[in-house]
Image (cartoon, rainbow, N blue to C red; front, top):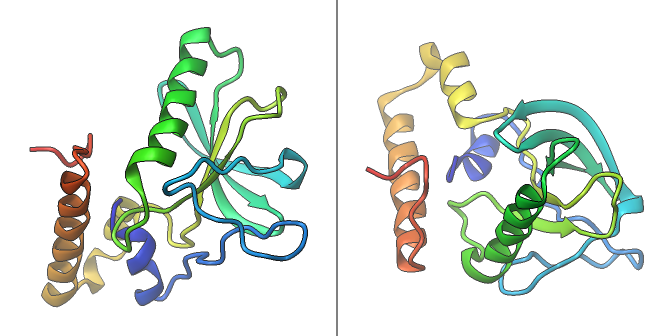
Length: 170
């Protein structure tokens, strides 16, 4: 997933590279290097894309821009809340911004009806795995090589920050 946000534009999809806008139409800053708390009233949850152990992933809108939202499941436990807040802190302080890593746009912490929410950039073509399955007949060796190279660059960036990607570690 590290390269998908950047590659989906090249492959005919559109990544929403416009970060959410503040009320004064200035661009909101990424959480990279600082915690960015976004306003819940500008958030509209859409359809459920995926479910994990303690989170749901939704297609959503923030201030009119397409985003992906990661929220805690209903009736979440105190430990789940702790883990989500830890993830938000980790993303804001450690990960940073890199063209080969999916961009975190910010978090919503002040809305008790949805719980803590992390907003990521949106990719029209879905997950990297889904794209590969749906387009396997049209993928060239050159394209696959570029994917591999971009994944390696994203992994190198994360490793340089002392981060091991949970799904890509060997």
